[in-house]
Amino acid sequence: MADFINFGFTQLTWANGIMLLVGLAFIWLAISKKWEPYELLPIGIGMILANLPGTGLLLQPQQVGGEIGSAGLLGIFIEFGLLRYTVLPQLIFIGLGAMTDFSPLIAKPKLFLLGAAAQVGIIIAFLGALALGHFGIADFDLLKAAAIGIIGGADGPTTIYLTSKLAPDLMGVAAVAAYSYMAMVAFIQPPIIRALTSKKERQIYMKSQIRPVSRRERIMFPIVCTIIVVLLVPQSGPLVGMFMFGNLLRESGVVERLSVSAQNSLINITTIILMLSIGASMPGELVMKPETLLVLALGLVAFAGGTAGGVLMGKLMKVLSKEPFNPIIGAAGVSAVPMAARVVQHIGQKENPQNFLLMYAMGPNAAGVIGSAVVAGVFLSMLS
Amino acid sequence: MLMIDWQEAWQIMGVAFGFTFGILAFLSLLTLLVSRIIARFPGSDEGGEKPANNNLAAGE
Image (cartoon, rainbow over all chains, first blue to last red; front, side, top):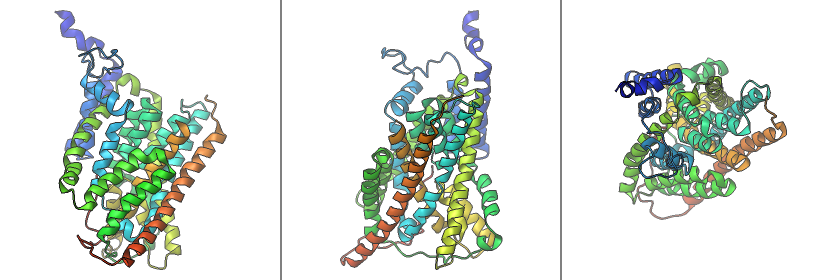
């Protein structure tokens, strides 16, 4: 009887205890502060379940030799949805594609360049992680460095997809870093934008309407993008292909039910499973290492670097552009859709109340999603 | 201390950034080109045009 009562408590380690507190903090942030609640709430619960001993929830089918009835629900999600087949991030991308409007990017294709420049954050964090490995501060090799760097893409599903393939041990921490920093974009980006631009630059007025985009253009865009990008980087196909497929459902106008399902049911169900799995992939003994803090720090550097890269490219485009060009829209090149675009809109309007930069910022925002998926594809093709 | 192959690292870095930049720049030109070609084709465009700011998109 005593054994039964003490069963859970006797197995609880200090690392589990800390992770329980972290899980509770995530739930509090989601409910009280409304920080990325759709992600942080299930991640928080996943963390708590992963750190309560003796549940069997985390047992993966492979670990129990496929014995019927032995694997746990979260273990099944993690093994089949992430580690073995990586289907969950790809399903999320179908929903994201169905929710994305590429019209600003089609109307102003030069905004692609801002999304490209913002990927520099990934490279900075990649090199930073390698330097830490080189000097013996952390155990980061090329695979782990790539997995850490991709946090700078500010794209949760891409981060999860790449880390689950290159460095599964880092998957939970990297995903949490990506989603946490996305939730904090409103705090991370403004100081960097202000440091790199003058008040006069931030006040630059851009006309409030961009040209209308025809239905044909909106239909052609995902088809052409898929063919070109996947032919050039086949390993980005699972992400870019699903993203563009979702977008075609939306823009074709002939499969309304599928489009609505992708935007709602599919993405909601997948989000529940994926985020629970991410939280559950963070048992204390795996996370409570000094390396975790370094991953979080490098993720922040990656976010900041991406923002700086986008803004600096914006400054270059301002010089080269014939029309007035506000460089702060470059900050939206880090995917973080649509939070980064909203930050740009907020700062732009604060500096010049007549400015309405949101539609311009949505361009690099969407380009950033494509860019980070391409970088992930390149990393995979060169490292796996 | 890990033995990092810095030559490979620089190569990966260069290809990852250079390739991504190149692809997105190419997509930019291609989008421009396709838009111009489409504009030359007559015919109906059911669903019509829409201003490029009707949606805030995504959410992840």
